[in-house]
Length: 74
View 1 (spheres, helix red, strand yellow):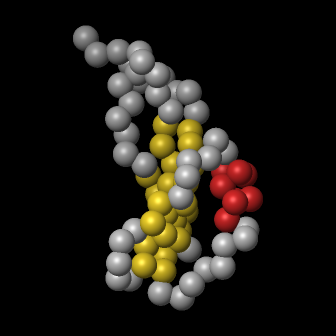
View 2: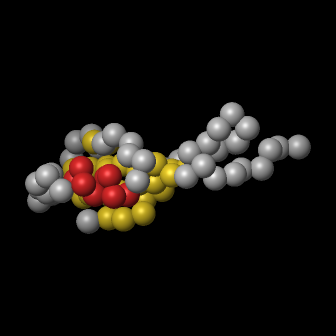
């Protein structure tokens, strides 16, 4: 029997996807507020899409293999 997934919180990061070229990933932050604070100094370029991704934090007892999910886009 598989152990149940239990939540330990989430981590958040920015993902920048240019129309051509590789996708850029930011570092993981412990809160949405920390990610917002880090992104305030970023000048958004035309021709790129900006996303906020979130994923659950797991532990050794969890089977958390969730891929990051987009929770906001610009």
